[in-house]
Amino acid sequence: MQDYMKALQKQFDRQEFDNLNALVEYTHEELKKSMDIVERKKLLRLLDAQNTLLVEARLSSFTAGFKLALGIIGELGASYSFDADELTANEVNTHG
Image (cartoon, rainbow, N blue to C red; front, side, top):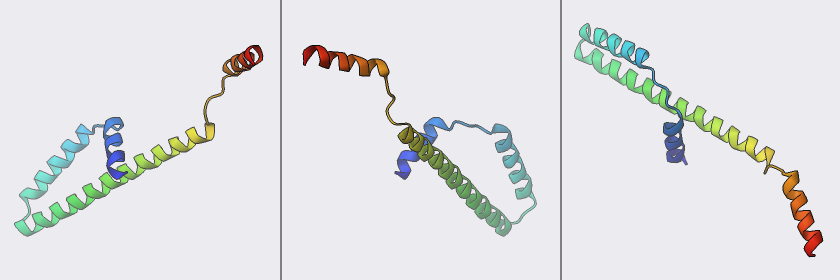
């Protein structure tokens, strides 16, 4: 189910944050210039963990919204058509 929800999210959630992505990249490069290799590795681990958390939170939020929509559809049930009901009743009365 997780893979299915990821595919749906990819299809419907097309938000792009180019300005924020550029700012993150710029800040990362600036920090990298002033750090030694050990500090860079720590920074990369932190960024990876934050990115993983963000991806999981977005997927969880999307899944919750999807489940809410399914619940609403289930509560509403199939749409009722008075005209279709009348047509069925008339057919029963004329043929049977």
